[in-house]
Length: 94
Image (cartoon, rainbow, N blue to C red; front, side, top):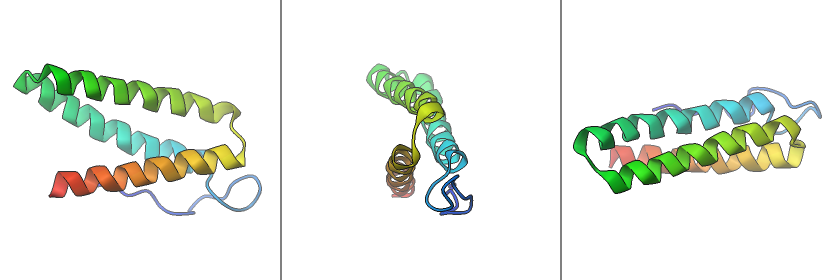
């Protein structure tokens, strides 16, 4: 799967995660959830569809939050989604 680069882009303060880093890792989680949502629709798993749709909603809210986020919040969101993606990748490969 996709693992975003760590620290490949510099933030305005010259260190830590940038908005682009956060958008990239959120996008990777969105892509994973979208693929799983399609599979859940095909299988008719209504509960899984609802859970994934809720996760996609949160991703959208976090992505929108980046517009006004400071460096600490950008770093927090990036770290949260990086860990989430690692978990999803591990779950998908297990």
